[in-house]
Length: 128
Image (cartoon, rainbow, N blue to C red; front, side, top):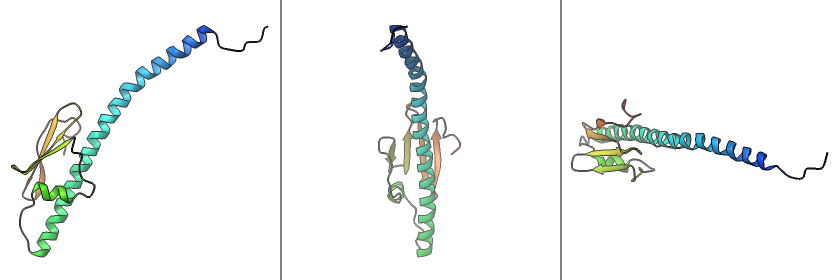
């Protein structure tokens, strides 16, 4: 047998086909994983807001201040802030809206010093 120093054309084509198949499977999975991460981050933000509002309410009660918490002051309680690309606040009705990667939205409103879900059609946030 003679010495082979390289790959044959068939071997190279086979490797390219295998890489193409793997990438065709991996890219859609990566995209779905990214969207799930964004929704999970939004769920965490809602939980953080609810906890911050409850803590601020307790602090105010201890000081004898029974005034309502508005959305602007609630957002100021979060140390790391919110993603302005995904969240929009509306001071007129004391609400904040999350827009998912697929364009659907979930609206939360502060009433009675609690953050309540007003309307939501984002898959993965129905139970909040």
